[in-house]
Structure formats: structure tokens, C-alpha cells
Image (cartoon, rainbow, N blue to C red; front, side, top):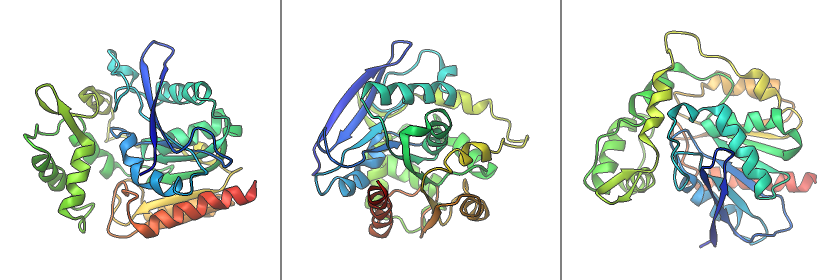
Length: 291
């Protein structure tokens, strides 16, 4: 198992923010910075971090946003906003001494990766966008809006696995019971009065403000901020967030962008299958070769 360390910084408004470091603190290769989905935590990158750090010559960091994982919850739910979160990410990069890296963003984390490309372009040497693009499918957003902060309270992790499977089985039709149980253990944790979510349930409140009847803003300018670096786009075969046509258009507009579709998975791929892990490893090592 890769060695890990819990790192804590403080936001401008005084919240404790958590990051997990995988591998040695100092290595000769570019680090990888991992940014999770809207209600997800650093644990989603455990599997791929194991692969990326296997040789002992690379460091991987994963960030918990405010209100997720081991970071403090925000007493003001309106701060669960990408403008606040990108400021936190940039501050964490500075505090941890990360000058440049390959950025790996899942869903919300991919949007933040594009914003890093706009606000601190010299920090990005390559970008992996996991099931996210400039056009977000409203069907998937409606599905996410329907469960974030609203999941039933399970008595056991096995109950939690059944809940998650019921909600997302159409996205992951081939997923094993063991994998659903692992997903449940990353969605809930042991608390003082039983299982509790690994994120602040108030995350549902900003989502409630989203009007799905209105067109969602497109993010092509944000995506084009990554034009100076190689990009790998991962798309779940059954994704209801990133349409196939959008993913193909991303490869057309970007001078160095490759698309990988993950079979039998939806939003967002779990990064646990060997072919996808190899594609990610090849991409990151290819950026080392360009240095």
C-alpha cells in the first residue's frame, strides 16, 4: 500500500481544509493534483493514486473541498460555490508548495481544473477531465440534484450499498456487489449516532437554486484555457453528464486532446479498472517525457 499523509491548511475565512498526500513528500517527477466531484472526497482517488505512485518516484495530492471529507463544513451554505472553491484550491496549492502539476478533476473537480487553467495557467502541465466537459447534460444534473444531501439514512454499509445501487444502477449496470459496498464506504462514515454522510448535507441547497428549465451555461472558454497543455478526457459509456458528441467536440477543438470511453460505467468512472488506469498512467508519464 502507498504511504499517505493527512495535510491541513486554513482557508482565508478560517476553515480547516484537508488534503491527502500519496507517496513521498519529495520526488523527481511532476506531482498529480486530484480534485473530486461535488459531494465526493479524496478517497475516490485511492485506487489510481496507488498506480501512479507505485514506482515511488511521484507524489499525488487529493483535496477535500470545504464541507467534504476531513475539511470543515461551512456555516454559510452559500459558500459551497465554485468561486469560493477555486479560491480555496489556489490557496492550498500555494500553502503546500505545489508550483506545477498534472491536474486530475472528476466532475466538479474538472470544472475547477479548467478554472485553474484560466487563473493560474503556469500551474498546469496536463489535465485529466473525468466525465465532465464544457456542456453539462441537464438529465444528469437533475439526477444529482435529486440525491445530494437527500439520501436515506442507512443502518449499515450494506444498506448504503443497496441505496446507491438503486439510485445509480443504470449508470453502472455491470458493477459488483463488492464494488457497491466500497462506494458506500466512501459515501458514509461511522459517526457518533451511526452512519453519516462524508459531506455536509447543506450541499443540496445550492443545487436547489439551479433552474433546470433554463439553458445551462456552456464552458467552452474555460475548456479552451487548457489549450496550452495535453488533455485526457475520460467518459463513462453510460454517462448522463458528458454526452458523447460533446466529448468528441472537445477533441476537435483542442490541439492535443484524447478521449477514452470507459465501458459499462457512467457518471463518473471509478478509476478502478486496469485499462483506464493504464491510460491514465501512460498520459501522466507522457507529460514527464515532454518535460
